[in-house]
Amino acid sequence: MPWLQTHLTVTKEQAPLIELLFENLGAVSVLLGDAGDEPMLEPGPGETPLWSHTRVTGLFEGDTDADALRSAVSQTLQAELGERLELEVLEDREWERAWLDNFRPMRFGRQLWVAPHELAVDAGDAVIVRLDPGLAFGTGTHPTTALCLAWLDGADVSDKTVIDYGCGSGVLAVAALKLGARRVIAIDHDPQALMATRNNAQANDVGERLTVVGSDAAPPEPADIVLANILANVLIDLAPRIAPLVAPKGELVLSGILQDQADTVAERYSAGVDFDQATTQDGWVRLHGRRTR
Image (cartoon, rainbow, N blue to C red):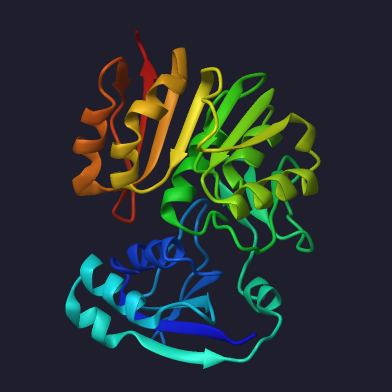
C-alpha cells in the first residue's frame, strides 16, 4: 500500500503546532528534523529543543485527501504555509523501524523515562515507560505530552485513581500506573487509540490495573487525578464532561493549550477548580488545579 508523505519547513516556534496538526489530521508518524545545518546540543531532562528552521515530516495513509491537508495547514497558520506544503507518494516499507531510528530515551523530571523496548536507560532509579511506534500518538516528544509527564514525575500518584481523557497512545496512563497509581481509566473516541493504550499497558506489565473505554460510554466514577492532554478548543467543548470526573479535593491537569488560550480554558473550568500558576514550555501551557467544591 502506498503512503502519502508531507514536508513543511517552519520556524521552531511553529513546529510544535504543525506536529500536533499533522497528528490530529491522522498522520501515522511525525518526525522533526534540521532544515539547515544547525548543531543540537544534548537536551536536559524534559527539554525538546528544536532547530531555528525545522522540517516537519508527516506520514499519512495513501488515501488521505492531500487538498484537505493543505487547506488545514493554511487555515491553522497562514495560506503561505499551506502553499509550501510538499507532498510525495511513497511505496510501502517498514515505517515503524524508520521512526524508531530517530527515537531515543527521554527523561521527564527526576526519574520518569520514555524509551523504546530495545534501548537501555542508564539510570539506577529510573521508572521506564517502554513505548514503540504505532498508529496512536503520544511519546513525550511533543511539549504538551512532556508537560504532563513532568507533572506526573513530581506528583504523588501512589495508590490513587487516575483518568486519562483523550489517551492517544496511553503514555500518560502507563506512566501513572508505573509510578504507582492504583487504577487508571483511559478514555478516547478513537478505537485505535484504545487498542494502542491497552497494548502499551500490557507491554509494560500494568494492563491488569487499566480500563479502556470509549468517550461515548457512560462516565466513570470521579477520580483522584484527571489528565486531559487534548487541544484547547476540545477542552473547552468537553468541560461539562471532564470537570465532573474530578473527585472532591482531586486534581485536574489540562494540556494541549497555547499560551494565548490558557485564560479561556481556565475560565471554562473555574467553577469548583482552583488553578495554580500555569506552566509553559515552547509556547504551550499546562494547567493544574484542585477541586475545592
